[in-house]
Length: 347
Length: 284
Image 1 (spheres, chains in turn orange, yellow):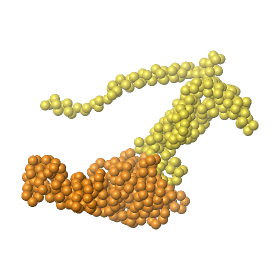
Image 2 (cartoon, chains in turn yellow, green):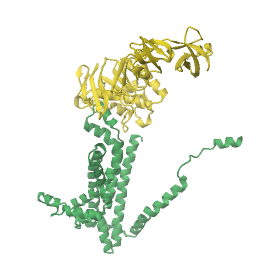
Image 3 (cartoon, chains in turn brown, yellow):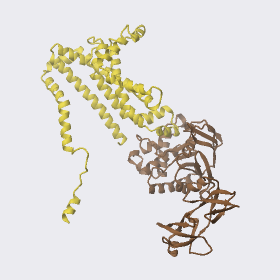
Image 4 (cartoon, helix red, strand yellow):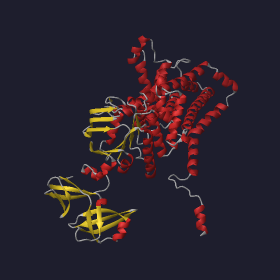
């Protein structure tokens, strides 16, 4: 159980974290998701004790750990660029955390070797114990870094952009593997990422951060299906953000009624492209003209021009495209399955 | 068609910025021969004319032996001192921003630029029994000027920049993340330094050591002022060579020079072999 209470951290005049509070339950894998500069890495480093907060408390397992240094926190930290010790073999790297223990805490050599062996098996690098980091691929290095962090049996595993420096395919394999590993070991974990797909696929819970504040905390489905703020809407997945007017509780875009607003005034309506249904021309529904059709593998992205010159992006299946005979210039009808309106300027 | 196939099957030469291997190697060898090897060869040829009895007489001369001992012993001691403190200086310059850092950085290079005689005179004035520091050390029974200790002090002075300047860039590249990783794994400061940082900078430290050593062995100007040059006590080998030349004892001078050449070469070779062994152990 990790509890972060009202953490603030400034670097000069830049507020990296502003009154951030967060709870992570035992055994959960949590993603800190946000653009660069959102404070997610700073929060992770504060959890690790690599950075001290200006204000607020950090509790690990119910115990106040705020002033504690990294050494005494028993957390495993995996760095984006691995930070492996270049002059040590894979086995020596993994054994490091056990070898530096003093006196009675240090396990006997045979136990260390046994531990290294089982960790190498866990990260599927059995044959590479004697290699040096320079002789490994990026994915292998990251797995060594993970094994090294796990060797000290941390109560909390922290990962800073763990797959950021890897190419797409390796990245995909490795994050699935991390998810399995987490399920097997039941460790509490927090990882930082700016990749929404990674966060949604791997994490039990996603914390969306922006400008040093938490925008939303929720399961991947909650975050994606019901974003709490315009920022989360824009940051996760693609979205149509249409300027609208709310009058009498009804939001209008270019004369088209699209949903409900809580208060009157100017606002922005957010509609996911897959919630824009494209239908055959019908007199009961608003009309649009197809201005662009792009085929992206299994899905088709179409740009539709509504009355009043407003452009909406729609996502539909290949079958739907073929059935409608979708092409540029075609007149179609549009049905908005789901829209969310935020009232206010500049949202 | 067949011509095209033939062309494709030929191994392509990688285009390179510098013209071909042949001319560059040829030039390198010719240049090295002219500048380095030829003078050294002349020295060895000259020494080869010396008879065995003459060698025996020169090498059993206690004055020669103690001069060689002081030159190499003093240089080794000075290089070791510089390795320790040069690392410390480089560490402070790389890790901590402090007011006046640029100035300190510039001061490091002064021993490079200063005429060695000036350094020698300054050091002598400072450490002489009536000098600023000498006066303070005298009551403690420590004599620096005109003793072997003075020789080491001069050698430390001229060798420092070699260690600082070779270690500095490498230390700069040692990622702070490595220290953080070590700390997160439970290592203390001393353990982090000895097990993580030191191995990473060891090659550059060794290079700095050998450069400082080579410089100290060959140093003449600054040492002869502070050494006092008492035969058998504080006389360095290069000075003995000059003395012998002034007495028209060319055979003696070349013999000592050849021995110095041999020892220096062996020392530098040993350092290189050490580097090679370390590289082999680290797997590149």
